[in-house]
Length: 216
Image (tube, rainbow, N blue to C red; front, side):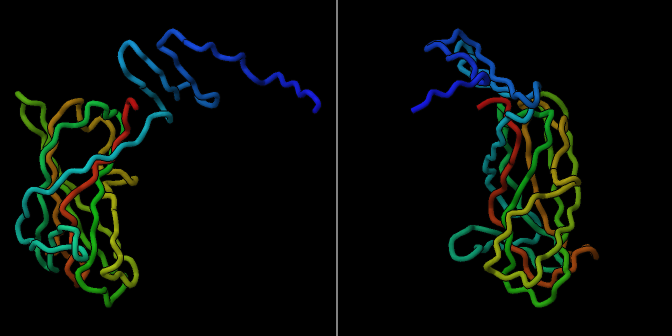
């Protein structure tokens, strides 16, 4: 067996390295992972940062919504055409590892309660939020999102959608501050002229908050 020699392999690492130990991307010096035993953390920056999701359960219906299920098992609430209604989700403290300088997304699982019979229709959703730092005044805001119904949307098509405020994200970076409290309310604004879907829409009783984390 001939010996093969290369000059592009770094020296062998020792069995133990005094931390913190940082690994930097060869293509992007701003993307790195740092192992810090003293702080009991593995932190990251740039494209090396992980994406996480946390489940935010619903706690009550909002306005004219009716409790139902998606299929036989998934707890949900449905909103009929020409009606405004939806869900309140449990307030939460933003995760300690959330990079609040980066955008984040809110996603929900939806389904029609009857098969669509007309294509090219739209459902108007409205996401409202309140965030605050305890001991200070709160900030509240909302936006509308017009979601295009898939062609031939059936009750077996369960869609996990991002509530899009523009550019495929829900909240822009630096909307929140670290450790703030956040509360969400989602509604179908069926009374809006923009909402043209003529069937009930079921919204599962949870939301997903997807964010960029600062550590593993």
